[in-house]
Length: 409
Ligand SMILES: Nc1ncnc2c1ncn2[C@@H]1O[C@H](COP(=O)(O)OP(=O)(O)OP(=O)(O)O)[C@@H](O)[C@H]1O
Ligand SMILES: [Mg+2]
Image 1 (cartoon, helix red, strand yellow):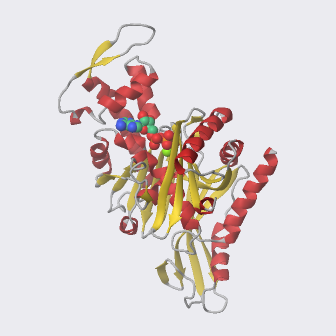
Image 2: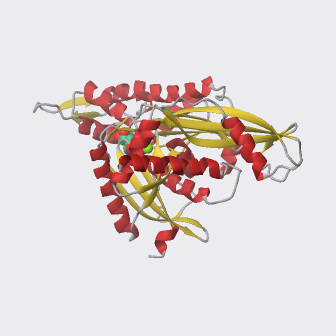
Image 3: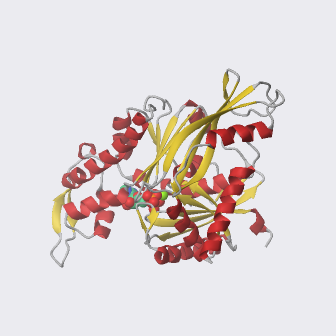
């Protein structure tokens, strides 16, 4: 099949759902041609805890996507999240060799900035240039060909626990897929839902999923901060299950149908019927009580996300406001509560920048999957604007994965 060569596939291994998105490169950009989703059973807080269950979910999602796109999927870009993710900023300085910045100088300065000690149990998954400084001129995004004697680079480094990353590759591998690269989920979500002008001005993306909340802050066009919190919608449902003494599945349903982020946003206080456990009769509960259970958890999630910004001194540097993605952003009143907490404008982030079956992926929970596909497409473009196509970095990633594959054989 000729089409197979042009396909880019994103594999979002989420805590509640596994999502496979197949896209095709066209003259005008990227077209979505297939999607497959299946409930995820083998993850907890964004990390694989049951390989067989995850492999089975991946296989189902892949089959569905293959049927829809009429193709055979062999290689994917996989997402990674979880509280084991650590990210920090670093910088390096080198002398420019021939008074004009060459690709070799850029590579050397990135290598200098990368030269920080990383514990043995952690792997670098991203090295993203934020800006270059030539002599005293800062804010340079594309240094190649510029004159100067001193080149400085500021970079953002993301590391993950080796074992968690290995488990993702292992699951994909066992499902018959080759992993081209592992991508941090907040970066993927940002890729799908943020506009270029928002990134320039300063914006915070928060993806509230089932088991994790991903944070990514952009400013001056590049990434400033990333964080992953091990809290998400499953915790809200769990609170409802415990608080209203109802099965988890019912708590999920009640949350989606009647839940509001804070009781003060309720227009009227209706009464809802809540099924009980152990064969007891359903009970009538006021909707206000339901919202009183939801609010503290949503408040906690949003405040923890905000605190990661405060720690980095970024809370006043997001004039474009906050963009919410992930399944939980569909909770009624979520945007209002986020606006109160962040004291900034908040909007819902929908996957954009894609064509084809875009209606099928037009939900905030597909931001990560669509972002993985866009990330894959971006990797082929020669640019240092957002991330450097440095063969040593990506070569190393591929070599690392090849090493893992050999370990599993
Ligand atoms: N309409 C809705 N109202 C409230 N919550 C919702 C709604 N729709 C989905 N959710 C919640 O969104 C969560 C799932 O979101 P999502 O699909 O983004 O998670 P995931 O990608 O599987 O997980 P993660 O990214 O944390 O690993 C679930 O907790 C679900 O209850
Ligand atoms: Mg997710």
